[in-house]
Amino acid sequence: MKRSGVIATSAALLLASPFAALAQEKVSDGVVKIGMLEDMSSIYADITGMGAVTAAKMAVEDFGGKVLGKPIEVVAADHLNKPDIASAIVREWFDIQHVDALMDVAASATALAAIDLAKAKNKIVVLDGPGATRITNEACTPISIHYTYDNYALAYGTGSATVKAGYDTWFFLTADYAFGHDLEQITATFVRAGGGRVLGSVRIPMNTLDFSSALLQAQSSKAKVVGLADAAQGMLLTNAFYWDRNEESRAWAQRYFQRMSKMPNMTQAGIYSATTHYLKAVEAAGTDATAAVMEKMRSAPINDFFAKNGKIREDGRMVHEMYLYEVKKPAESKGAWDYYKLVATIPADQAFQPLSESKCPLVKKMQ
Image (tube, rainbow, N blue to C red):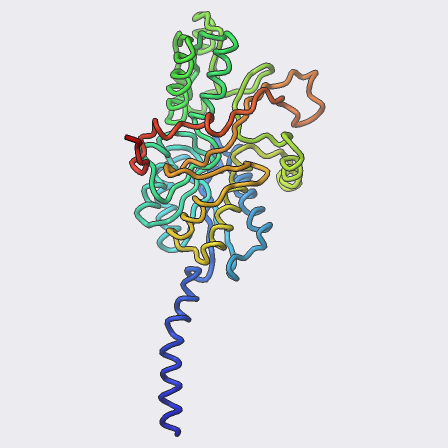
């Protein structure tokens, strides 16, 4: 009887071991770890930086701090806007710190470097700050998602609207790096498609403070529109989020304001939404394994204060409505942070590059 009991106990342990191991593997390393790789000290520090990290942490807190019974952690670092530094941080996060997913990598060049590493390590990367359309075209992968906006959406909303309004000659003051080049090229395409003309452009080096020479060239071109990234009364701009759009956006923005003493922008709002969507997918998948979580992220619609009926396409583009705003005149503003008035809502199926034009190798083309 004793011998039988020993044999029975041993058999039970053998049967239990695979299930115990399986339960442990549901959440790798016993924690779901999210990485935020931002610009903390350079030109994007205000629009990404600690505001982006704060948005991710708010999402984790609102989720309850745990998923599948395991803690959720957020780690953050400054990549100094250098792709080599971004790559080194991402490699260390994946290999040593066991980060499960990146919820943002600010700027296009650093994001593209991170995507390459994430693909090699089979880790999820969601991008909210970068705008380059290459992310969902030639550089698309099964593990990357472009969530908040891209240059196509910005160019379509603003370029098409201004040409239709009769502002049909353009001169560009273009930031001299990947984001600026991409945005100019796409906007120019929409201007010409609408019957407009581009009369010239000037490339502006990063961190330039003196725009006098460039503005003189723009003035001498006699163009009706000067395309640039700035804020001025009467200017039209396209955005994925504005804090004062509705009750939902105002409620979340006020909570963010209590922490940061400023209203959130579209990148920061998108990060909160993306982080929540990721955690819901982990919960639904019952694991933090990349393939299972990506399947849930792609199949579930996004409905929150940031997006309604948003969905992630096969190219990794999260499609949702975009908004065309006009900057208010000082007399129209009712107080601090009251800057924009809504001009038009751009439907999701128009706001982003159609799949028929995609260069993503994951997209099945219709014959």
